[in-house]
Length: 82
Image 1 (cartoon, rainbow, N blue to C red):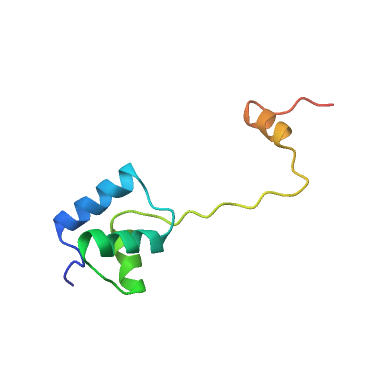
Image 2: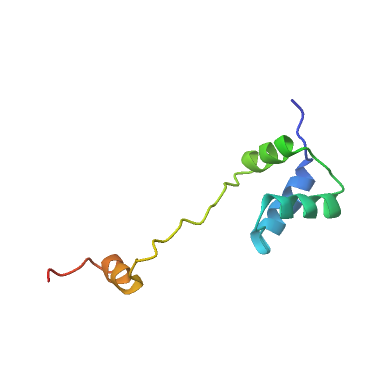
């Protein structure tokens, strides 16, 4: 299977991702289309980014009743018994 991007295109994509980043896959696809002149299907986009080592990051929901101060204290060494 031939690579979807040339080594030069991959390097430019990695450089942009390292310096400015991409918030979404669509944002990355738009940049790639404008800067590199390469349009790919969604499956191909995912494959390119997986091959380059990018992973999907999804923010985790926080419980409404969560206490940020208690969580910070826990991260700094646990909680003392009350």
